[in-house]
Image (cartoon, rainbow, N blue to C red):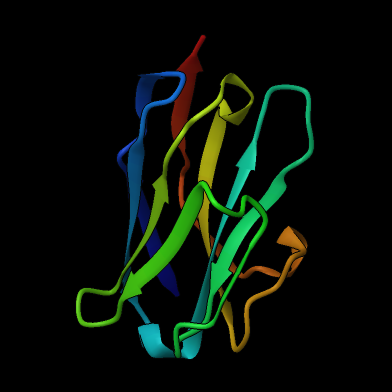
Length: 120
């Protein structure tokens, strides 16, 4: 089992920044790629970014969001800059063995989510 706990969400004005954190515990962190997804009300869960143990990154919000991980702290981060109202969603951290994936259904473990609200 892998336990994931997100933090760092909140209310921010458009153009502002937030940094989300996801602390992992349980099985060996190095065995897992980590991903961030988001889900807005009435919409399907959406891929944001993923990072492998080696640091290889794939992201969908280029130029504004940056995923990173600190393997010594078993923590993955999502730095979000120039936030827009359409970024408002619950943001979820997830873990999958091996390489990162785009499809949220392929992830094995999930955090409880953290709300990000961007006001205009």
